[in-house]
Image 1 (cartoon, one colour):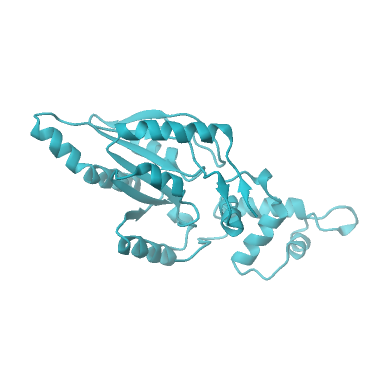
Image 2 (cartoon, helix red, strand yellow):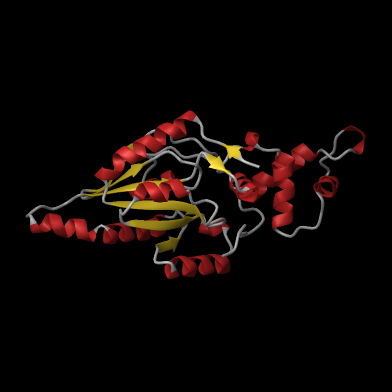
Length: 260
């Protein structure tokens, strides 16, 4: 199954990213630590070209730390600069900022050779709802970029000054036009990177139960929890929505949906 999920604002965002790329010194690609592969947009990597780039696995507090460590090792072995963090924690967000400044050191040195003190300009990119704006807000120390636990909140570009010589461009979340991998699309939807109304919510919940190895059916869980309709029939729609909300809120513990 192919998902053609590319609203008009995403097409505009892709053009904007391409236009702005020449203005930045470094790119921070934000992915979801619960699905470090499926939450990486290949179009974004291509747009970055030869720009210095770091990979930020956000929402690490929701992911299995042992699996996250394996992913970081894999990315390191492939030559990428990667770290895992929780963007809402400022001390952790600052580690990403330091890596970005280090990655831009060559551009800073070239400016210094010309007698100039350069302002490092970075771009923060990623799929919807991966935590780009949360990262910027943590670094800034206040909420300058809009955030929400759903995709599509950031629609335009926004430059945010972090320090006198370091500023970041917040960008809209960007998916690729065609997602041919059904399982990858489901995983993206489970974490809120794609809108629930693009899927059968009950199928999402059943996929979640299967992925985490829960042998109970959605119907059985509804009966156990008392989520019933008239006549004692399981209210599977209510159950599915509740289970998804609980997973996304970390109420089931630290769970990673894909392994290296």
